[in-house]
Image (cartoon, rainbow over all chains, first blue to last red; front, side, top):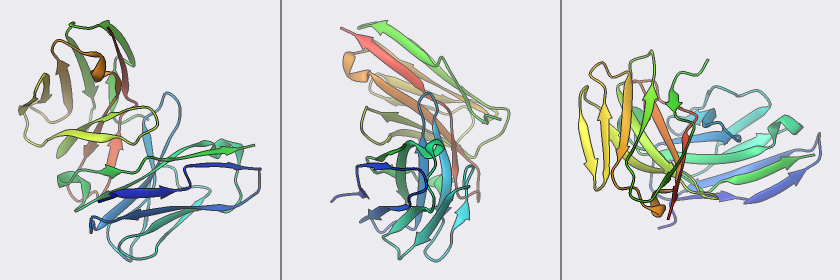
Length: 114
Length: 111
């Protein structure tokens, strides 16, 4: 049982390049989330998908787009990367909405934008 | 504006000592979760508290949810080097569909 799988693990981009971060979960969870984590800071929510077919903005959505491809997969796209997007990105899933269901995290994608 | 404030931000102690970390807010949460994160990995859930005044114990870790459901604490008894990590609290409200995380407490336990 792999849980939440994120790819790639590491990525270096130049300013202006685009890329998609992939996330898949095999726990049949309904809700999925994308967070970013910067040094000295906790996790900040970028976008989330409460259920298949829906997506909503989190605290820091600017510069990102998401796609809930199916129940298992939730991707995060950077259309034109900026140095301010250098961060560690975590995907998470939960069986139900988070107020009564814990988050299960992947191991992160470490992104550097030069 | 940080909705959840954790203190202290950093804590370095010797093996065997006790410690308490705090998670405070001016907002009411329907549930609060504590996670532990090790370098290079994602956070892992330690506990969820949902009732005001609730106390939960997980071996040497004791979690308390404030009566008003605005704050929480994590107490570790006789800390061990294996307790080293980043401790994060996260609050959620009913029907909000998302959690808000604190900035975390980085704990180092020296042998």
